[in-house]
Picture 1 (cartoon, one colour):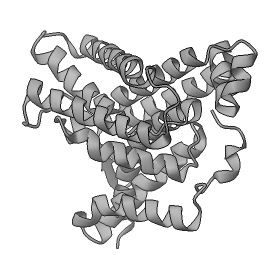
Picture 2 (tube, rainbow, N blue to C red):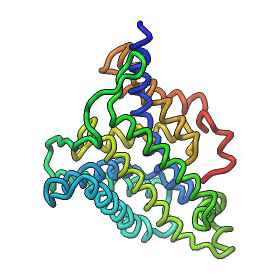
Picture 3 (cartoon, one colour):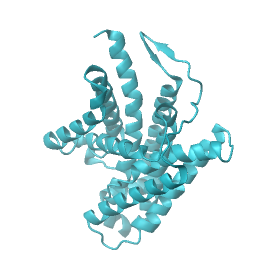
Length: 293
């Protein structure tokens, strides 16, 4: 195989992996703040793309205005999900929480199908479709947007959790919720914040990837599962470990599709997940979990 092909697969994989990393960080934030694996996370990715389409085509807003409106609407949906489905529970068991998040995922997906139908829709790219040459490979401007926005969000995420009062309060909840409550931290508010942040990040991921992969009512299922794989690889850390896990998963998936067969593209993520769970259940970067966020 030529070096140019290898470079092409790697660049494509890094772009895809950045999306998985954003979704995986959303999983990790909610898990560390609440102990919940939110299997509805992929639906907020879908809502990001579909709501952007709604503001573009129905309300005729320009792209620069449609994107923040879509993120705000998706974040509001995340807040409602926490308020209506999670907060009313009293001493829920882990299986109760899993069933509720899966049920929420099915509900959101069903409502999206009723509102927008089963067709696949496209969103315009942010800055044109002329490919950019990188070595012997080419990359679309949208790939650069994906990687740039991912880096920006990861940096903002780190600043929030380590340099703001509410971020430090969320970290305290991740260590010990009861102790955090005893020192005056509003644990319920921190849980709400975790859903706000994760739904906003998920919607951004759905928006920036939609110009490349298009969007539909059911795109969140596979993206959510692969984001969950990235979170598991990173040891459920909302920091750099999950980012590395997402990038690694994206590159492996791209290389597997290019070198073996595109038919195995989706299977590769789950093969990697099973191997991690069997060999190293705490994730490849389990030692970094001494400080969960």
